[in-house]
View 1 (cartoon, helix red, strand yellow):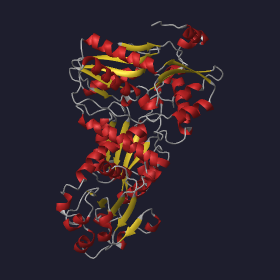
View 2: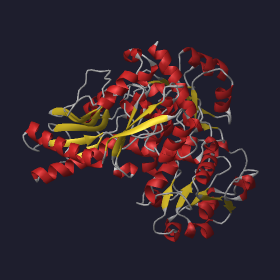
View 3: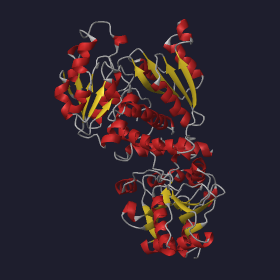
View 4: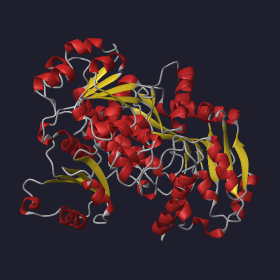
Length: 249
Length: 335
């Protein structure tokens, strides 16, 4: 797929030149999305109480479906089948994606692939930058992960810090044969040497933008939207993304 | 949540549910090969015990270690307290050592409150039992155990029997269980009910047999002889016959009801040995759950830049403030 649509070029040029510098914005979004109780009402209140925002949908439900089908095929192709495969999603939305991928792999390959979820909250490096947060559930399939091929699944890949935490968490649970990473959206701005093996869509973004993945199981509908605050009062809009679920890290 | 855990009265329903939910996730750690989380690395937890304790101290120590905190155990016996050092000087010593949390048990009611509000120490204070006042983590683990067996505590009927007068467990439980929506009935001889018990939420009764058939949980309290300075009942045998839980009374309970005891037990006094060992008694499980609940308390008090706010069920005001605080901090880090 084209890495740069004309639209995204517009966004890139609208960004002030110093965005690649170290700014508080870099780590701020990294803390978002692990609130297991996001509600649309909070998104709404946050949006109305801060600076005006622009929202555009970059991925609709059929797009997500197609991307997941492709990722499922790529996982099977890369690993020459579903033998020894375990899908572990990172809550909240990564967990739903892992189960969707497992369903698709089962349809293609006819084999059931164990899927579970891995909460990485206790392993995050930014715990002390925010009040203590509530935990999500870790569910490792009964087969375990020792000697298996673990595919971590998350909705948005951003700083890479969540994935680092997930690798640490895996380390305490067992010793997989190999670990791969599948994400629905890669929005760039990595802060660690981490890359995804399977990507649904590469989405060029500015750090000030927020990527929201919405999934039917959690949000009632499928879609990926980018929210960008209008630059006036540009400092406040980042707080608005934290209440919202599915924001990028 | 407040910075300190001094009383279950300080916990809102959201706080209490967050603690119980967090403990539930942390309990699953016990099934893992590595029962340790890196979350509190570099934090120091001091167990400051002026009074004897087995369960509570060991379980706080295990909880802190599983979260990778450094643990310093202080017991009054064998310390400078026996040379006459005051609570204040002990606290100042701990502050100088950089304690992030102080878990305190003291024979004087209000000692943890004094530590928390005096400005002697900066860390969080967790009350692990003060005199006849409160024992919040015991109440939390009791509520956790009840929830595992009964589901939601809303509308459940809990009966607490025995030496309520000297029991910090009873007071903490009454406050917490009421917050969680349960109805509590205290059963004791009139001499063992505290003055002013009429002002407590819930009901009181002198007749155990009348209350048992409609109880979902019966919690037996130890008769605390060591705190008794007067004759509160004619004889141990008479107490046991009127307020002890024996096999006959166990049969009167509804089939789903569970039997609890905060320990240590006086078998044959408030609870018959065969009842304590029956499969409806969850007394050993209470101890096991203590580690999970204390991990949750330490994590939610120390795990972040400040204690956890209640999850988003309430207004967004709190989280907005928290986000602002975070922005400040990240800005400082970036610099």
